Each structure stands twice: as structure tokens, then as C-alpha cells.
Length: 195
Image 1 (cartoon, rainbow, N blue to C red):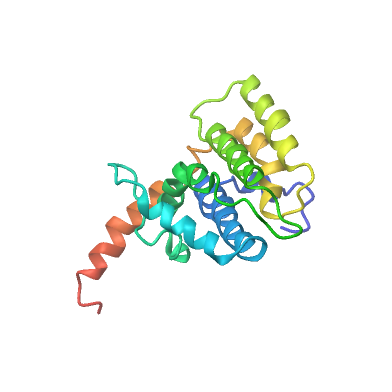
Image 2 (cartoon, helix red, strand yellow):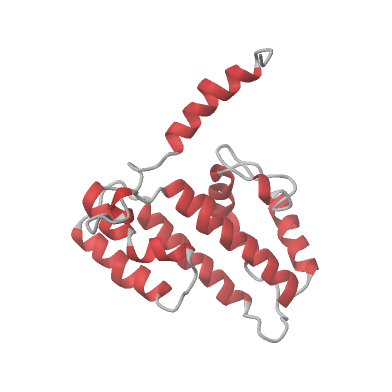
């Protein structure tokens, strides 16, 4: 199929919200923020994030791990969504001093704010042409016009055409099927003798 001139991988595969946003960019953003804070501020700041996450009162529907971001490698898409609900409040006024080449805490909060704004726009059930134009012009082009990160290529150039062709990203999510796989395949298998 590589010789076919009409073959376009981006129209053959649609962007998946769970893998692209929750387990892709959100995960990358949180991991990068932790590394950045360790290098440009200090490791105490990373511990303070975990401490602030621990202090968040428990609320139905909001699951925050008691260890904060320590077990970030084991997070599921739902865990990342829960962290993103509170992350701006957690990092607000987190630090004042930073090493050369660092950014102010306010700018870091702004990065998360803009990402969450875009994330919420992409989670809409229905889009008008005006919604798509605003998303394309005011969010994706402004936010990511200087970014050279491969994770953002699909988001920047292929999400809007995909939404125009197939509809909302919620329709294209694999999350439902992965949940069914867990409840209908993995859990029953665990209750067998595995032979």
C-alpha cells in the first residue's frame, strides 16, 4: 500500500482522545513539568506538588492519589483527567525563585490553563463551523505555531480535518472498548485458574 499515491495514514486512522490527549499530551505535560521543576527550581518544589495534592479534600467523583504524582507511571487516563481538574490550583504560587533559563510560576500556570481550554474545546459533543474555526485559529495555531514536539503534530494539523470528516473526538475514543475489555475479559480471566 506504500506505492499507492492516494493512501493517507491520517485519514485511515482517526485521533483518539484518550491516547492522544489523556495518555499522550497530558502525561507528557505533567512528566515534563516534574522534570523541569527538579532542574530549574528544586526537588522540594516537586515534593510540594505531592504535598498539595495530598491536602485536597476527598470529593465524590474526584480521585486523587494520596502519594500525589509519585506513581505517575501507573496512572490511567481517568487519573490524568482527575489531576488536570486541580493542577492549576496545585501549581499556583508554587515557587518564586528559579534558576537561569527557567520560567515564572505564573507562566507555567498559563501553559496549563491554555492546554485545559483547548482540551475542553476538544471534548465537546458537537461542533459548529465557528467552533472549529476558533479552535483552529485562536487555539491550535496560536499555541503550537512554534512548537516542534512530535506529539503536537497530529493535534495541530490533523484533528480539525478529522472532526470535520467524522464528528466529535468523543465518538472516536477507544476508552469505551478498553473499559469493556477490562470488565469482560481481564477480570473474568483473573478469577480462573489461568489454564
